[in-house]
Image (cartoon, rainbow, N blue to C red; front, side):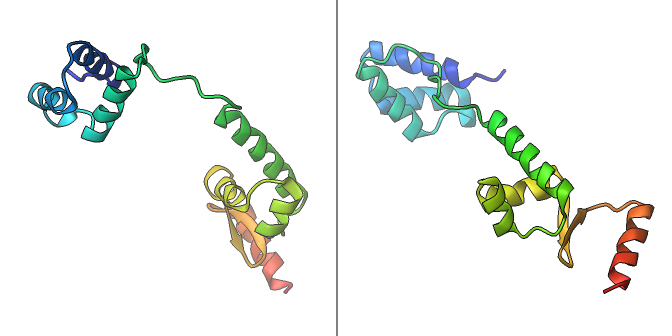
Length: 141
């Protein structure tokens, strides 16, 4: 049976209320759970938080836009630019989209499954028709 991080934090909170220190709390964790425990530094950080008056054992809500919404919008922008023209350089895509070139590259490689071949971004796995078109295109060079 696996003990979740929130359950371990609850135990840390109880140990703080019983006025146990970090070493006692961590040693009890290791004795009970073995290698599936939180690291010592994490236990010490949570002991400090509970000693300072924190009540909740769950993670706090992060502010800002959810990461998935941002990446979905970035992917749509990059995909639209690539539909217009496949001869983009990363720096040009960064300037045109306003998205960092590392993120642009990650979207191109990991999400759109494109790679750069002789100044064109093409799919990793070419279909027979695409292979024929690419070979025809390169023959004209």
